[in-house]
Image (tube, rainbow, N blue to C red; front, side):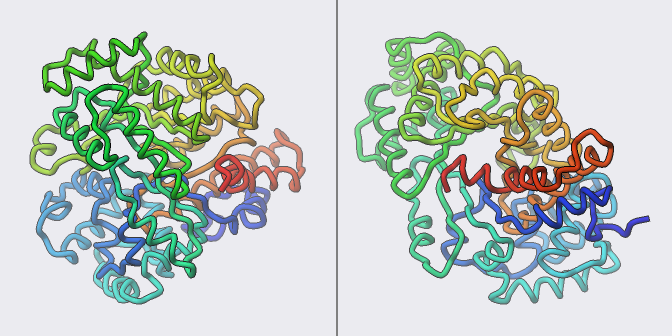
Length: 466
């Protein structure tokens, strides 16, 4: 029986262990999609205690605590930081077989050298000892990124963001991590949102242009995208239910946009025309800029009406949606590709039923102009766990080229989340190592080891030109 979370955690064979320890373990991290707060990096923030760095804003943990019968006051409410941590410690033993159990203990080990499993019995000691460490310079935000060998971190930013914190970070010559912005213009796509008019007004103000037409909206978005590019931004990201790709004309899009400016009610059909038009225009823009576009598809958000009213969005009430994805995605990519305007693209699905769909869709538009131009993104959100990652990699292997995969990202708001890259790397090495020992792959450690390093780092570095 192997000890829990030992050096061969998740590595079931000696070959898997060799692949991980000799090839994957020490590769730098390029975290090309996350939600880390740039201001906290710029200010090299030090948190006061373990709860602040570990539980604030972590809706994964909140969902588990609620499922364990913990009152909301211990999640997002007004209980003290230690009381909240106590409730998390009470919950952890009940999270076995949820990835939270692995993540929790990986983070305790990798950051704090804490090897006991968390429970109510040791909660006070772990809280006090880890909180004392957190207050030291070694646990400032920049120190944590350096400790985990994070070479590049790409945050997720609204087009109206000043990016002042990215500018501050870039001026720190002693900090070795590049922190680059990612352009996230969904607010200007989702025209049916009740705040759409105010979003457009803010964009006009920040871009210093009048927005009285659809063409002027696109002009303002391009101006802001150019600003992002001037600070090293090379990625755009969209978090949508599904791709929008109905037939449209510029005149139709203009008409719908004018109704929005007049704050008139817009029908579902009109909204779909506008969303299809602006999403296509953005795709053309990304190609012109030489960027990569990312699409995170399929989240059913804010399901709990009462919680949304009382707590707001991004507090842990989202789930997997079941929209049809294939036809619109094919039409959207095909429309861009037809005129050679399709940028590098990464597609993430939240519903695992769509794995094979996505794995085959990318093959329709990988045109030989570069390796892996269109990517099937890593297991995302509810799928960034052992089963989800294995299923994603198996689908990609069966229907594409796993060897050209750009690998893992955290998609996290936490500075303690980077062991998720280790988690992914161990799963990848176990998958390949087991098949070598089963005779399904050749015992060519040099080549497969290089493949592992490519997936963990080099493919990503080359793909984004970091």
